[in-house]
Amino acid sequence: MAMNHIDIWDKCLSSIQEYVSPDSFSTWFGPIRAVKLAQDVLTIEVPSQFFYEYLEAHFLDLLKNAIRKHIGHQGRLEYSIIVENTNPNGVPTTVKMPVSSSNSGIKNNPVTPPINAEKLVPNPFIIPGIKRFEWESNLNPAYSFDSLIEGDCNRLARSAGFAVSHKPGGTAYNPLYVFGATGLGKTHLLQAIGNEIKKQHPDKTVVYITSERFINQFMDSVRTNTVSDLMQMYQLMDAFLIDDIQFFANKGKTQDTFFHVFNHLRQFGKQIVVASDRPAHELQGIEERLISRLKWGLSASLQMPDYDTRVSILKTKMYQNGIELPEEVVEYLAHHITESIRELEGALVSLLAQSSLNRKEVDVELAKNLLQSFVSKVTKEISIDTVQKVVCDFIGVKIDDLVAQSRKRTIVQARQLAMYFAKELTNQSLKTIGLHFGGRDHSTVIHSLQTVNNLMDTDKEFSLQVQQLRKKLSLELT
Image (tube, rainbow, N blue to C red; front, side, top):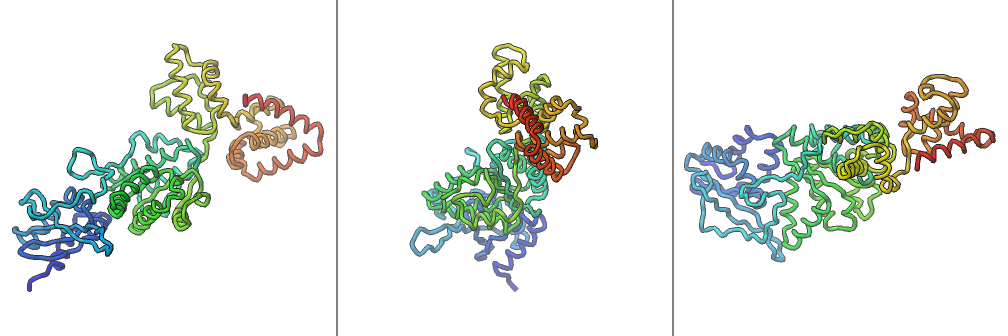
């Protein structure tokens, strides 16, 4: 019994499936529909020009072998590509796609009219001058997990990012929503995730894009009436990483396009990572249906790193660039620049540049002089270590006593005062403060705060002592 075009294509798919991963098979062969079989020519319908080019570039040999196996050596394949019609009825038409090689197993049909180039969205990932389709992931290889220093400030986000990069789409962290203020490493983390996915899964298609670029691409596609092709491009990703989504605010049409891309990717188990400067529930001008989807997976915040982490960041940056600086200079920068990792690294570069130009040795005095205006703008906290040192000098006890289990009244009171000022003068959490005092829990810190407040209200001598300590600590902020 002669087989029809559907039977032939099903057999071809069975052959192809043996050599293609389940994800790739679902993405690239699931949407294909067999149209007809006539004179050993099988016609298949594909969703877009973009789809056709990817099949040609990556699966041509598989297609050729499958066609010859189930139709015969004379078998040929012809594409019909769906093109959206601009007429009011909105009915799509199909256009046959000729190719240049008659021995490739694809039928050459020179009389077929070419697709109108104006209807095609410029592919944002194609390399100019190269006809064959290639992915351009927009990833900077300099950003990696190795260069992303771990600390209390980013441990959850970094660990989740590492997990999804090793098993994209296969964890509960989908989407992974990362948020934090400017300069705290969101872009570094997204790029590191993308680079690690490419390292662990070379066959995966990964793209990193800023919201601004996505918006511009959408506007271009609106002008050329090719929004559906734009969505098709992004729906074929294995990992979609988008930065600064807060800029989608009040851009309803862009949000709608992203919404459909998001739904498609998540439905097919593809990894989505989104970064913003605030939690999802605080996003303004973003549709509620999109916010609810951003909350589906894991939300992880990035905070400003504590003193020890800032020192590690500076030392890592110095090592990467073959730089050596005195320990006291590193400590000075880590103590006084506390608002942004980007500013911390920028201060290091500025200091080294000034030193090189003026041929002066880098020391604390040079750092103070050259960075005085810069530091004065960003200095808003001192480290817990500095608080401990000042309190211990004032009370007359050793720093080791603060982290020990001693219950002597003088040491207990010094510990309570140090915890009190650590909470008042830094942005560190109760948990982090407790860790700096011998690994005590947050409830101990809360008790210390309450004790100091009560004593200030009832003991004038103690209150005067607190005022004197505050003046000494304020000198550390200047």
